[in-house]
Length: 584
Image 1 (cartoon, rainbow, N blue to C red):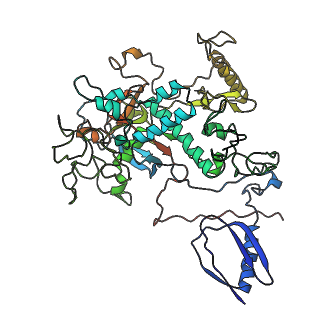
Image 2 (cartoon, one colour):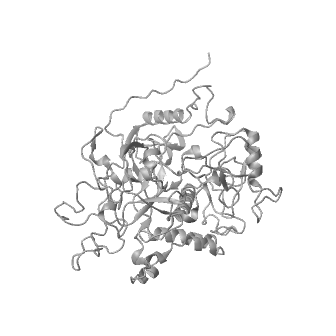
Image 3 (spheres, rainbow, N blue to C red):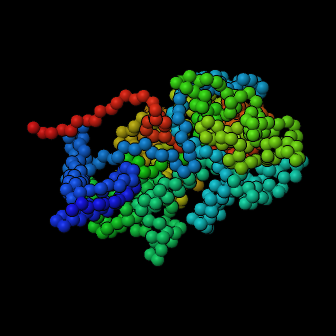
């Protein structure tokens, strides 16, 4: 008898069952990763397929190359080897394949005579970057989350509000923008402005946690509000329950009833205990680890070098490592108008063409904008990024120094490192101290290398003592941090070369000195800037607490693993698999 079996195989777990007069076989949870197939089996072929599937499903565990011990086997210590992945970008991001370019090389003039664009060849690692600027709607999402998560914390909500007063001018009627620009739905897809550098940092941390939390909820690893409906746990954090934080979750400090989902990974550690949360009762489970490759790296501001490299987008002019043509803007050509037939003469970015000309002539608004424009206006550059020139300037991560081009490293240049360590509430158990929002408390790093365990404990004990009202620790009366310095006497650590220890009067910042670590770089030109500032190499600065109607931002994310993003059609060396070990 011939048996016809038709089935479709998407990239997900299926239940396949085969039946015949003399054979009954059920294969559960066998994962295929191939195109949809239609297969015709004879009775004999069906039996052979079932047997082969059984054998493949029972294949041996992968072994360690150096010890021969099998991985992912509870009976051999539970050593875990995770599936090697090349993670996709987080929501809103596009990949930017890195490479070498000349930092400051696209600037053909220095009209400010600041000598800010000294040319230097550098290498930028591959990374991810927001396709668009962060919009008003994106920021309203952030404000809404704060209002439902901490409804009584008016200070947190107030601190997160953009400064809408940036629209006010003494001799200009801009009050409609003060009232409407952030919240009116007509402006929801316009870039958020009035955001300081510090506020952008807080948004990046919030976005990291919300994106990772949602990933875990979608996979069933974290419980959702729907899962907890009617079980005594609200959709928002209850009293004493802080929101999800990626660092806390990875340190196993975000667990328990109402948090653990039904599909948490099995814990293969032979010492692991079964739990009644996170799936079937009596099953040992664990939170996701960084090694699982499920969680995304942190969102952050791009570095100045990353931003300039991504804006210039020379990848579109490159063939076999040869750059066919340079650029002075994110698009090709020497001008700012479109050369294409259908859009010929239109302005390619939102900027100020001349004194008093922000939009063009009534009846034919050339750049279609008077202030900002929607974040997906104008053609994207060759990396697929919108508005890397004009619309709004964008904050970057770097601290401003005029001489950065001469001093930064030639690989992934950056100025502004402030190295930190997470403070322990209980060093013996590895428990992090957290603030009232569920985020780990971080202290300035005191060493350029890994400390001895005894030194680390001494440091943590000193830092865990909260300062009193006069800046002294209650235990000793000494200034905060004195114990830590004494515990590590003779081991000073300067985090970077920004000159943070210089004796500079910060009250004179902007008057007699620019050497101040609160001065941050922004780039890109805005709706209210002349075309000169559209060049990716130009740079300006502003205090991290200040805001402007001409400055917004977009986020970036580290790319982990291979830097090659588009390997298709390119030559590669073959890679051999490791040989298995068999004891003789």
